[in-house]
Image (tube, rainbow, N blue to C red; front, side):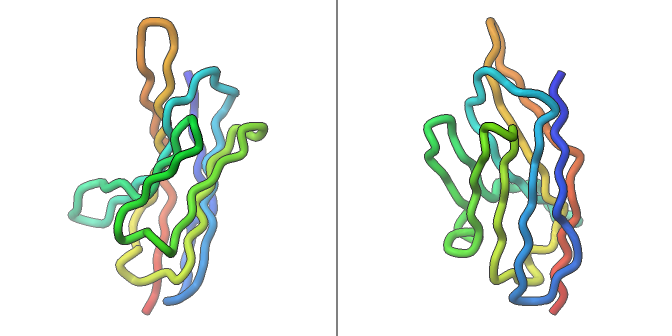
Length: 119
């Protein structure tokens, strides 16, 4: 079993920056895609950014130009650099990882980290 541990959330002012980290508890042989999702109170969980095994990235429209997803395979860690934060970015941010092992796909979620942006 793999555990994902997020860190880096907190309270930041409008226009500020935060970097979220998501560390896997062990190395994983075949990671297909890793991503960040967020869920605001009373709303569904939405994709923010993903990075695939080939390094290609995908961003929600709300994140384009402000957020950057990256990874450090040696550290089993994925990052989300968030700049120019807005109050509407306030949410719990979750890390997600999908990997493949013989005969199955594995879908892992972290416990979430709170990001609050004050106006």
